[in-house]
Image (cartoon, rainbow, N blue to C red):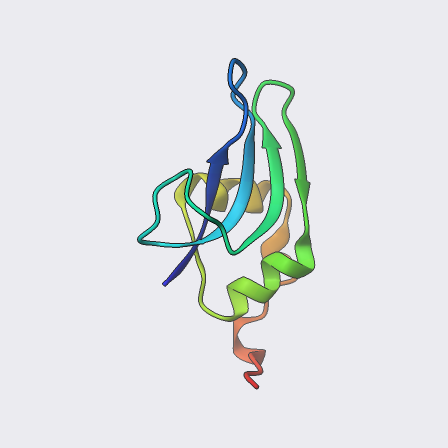
Length: 87
């Protein structure tokens, strides 16, 4: 199962990447793809929306924190789970 979750990057300051990663991997493990960036101190967010929608359509589960970030960025307005196309 694939999860969309935060991966810490900053050493002194907490800065996170939003990554698609296997659910069994540890937090700093090898990710499948980087799909965003989140800085909680400056409250900045960068999201690669097409990549996020790609993983959500294929059943990736976001963590609670990532789900809140997506809701604030209104990513779910573009997400249509019923129109899934598998190759």
